[in-house]
Length: 389
Image 1: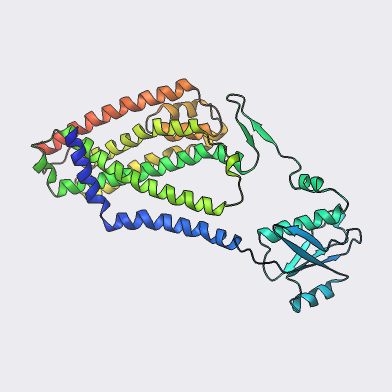
Image 2: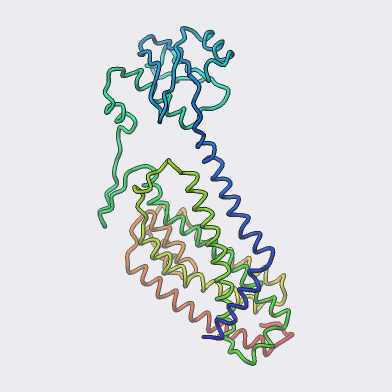
């Protein structure tokens, strides 16, 4: 086992220092953080909002001239016609104005005139203004209920989880699908890197130099472990960048205490994803051994990458029939098991026996793949310069 870790550490050190790896690893999360920080910076502007005008053509709304907004008061000014409001806007006395049409109570939409679209704070202020104009004598608790008139709580019958509707509910059901997509991308990247690493050492004749001190299975396991750790490091950095970007994007929009994560999905993502990941890495190394040159290795890695994302092609069948025969078969097939299992968890409760059977099949497939690739490696070393049949 010590030799396996030595090969893995050497492979990791060689690849992690490459310029292409560093650029790809850090450029993507930096761009994600920037994308999430821009709305955060724009929404964090706490400057006082200019007064807002309104023209009430219904004649039935209460004249609200001030509303509380955060720690300040937003002023409103009434105008009798559209011309007066336009002139006040041109003199920069107001930042914009509302036009409430005569048929507002029949369903006609309110129009807001301004140089720029209203931000989140101003939109909230305009909503409060209309509530108070429609119900001027209503107590504060009625206005608060009007903001959220029909909150619903999802009650899970199997485990008793309680999740309020909104972003928390979306995150609860989208998390397994997001894990499935993330795992498919990890398999795609690892398969391409694994084949290239094996071919590079074949071209440099490094395998012949170290085969005298290593068994084929130890060398294969070390290469797979090293490249896998490299890919997982890259993926972890990407996930941290994505998490930071999402945190900035949703800052102040979601109560973190209301979010309930599906920990069972994370457990099965780890239990099925790890052997599934290593299975693809071992198969990729075998394809690299079979490949005659780097170009052929890239073609074979591309084919394996197609297999890695193949479960996403069947997402429609899984969504429409998560407990159907096709979904169950893909759950048990080792090359699609991790991704399809997580996809199904977003729409149904996957039976425990199917998950356990999938895990057992994955382990058997992994051991069989290591044994087969080790034999391929041995044959390739004994047939230097010849094409394997």
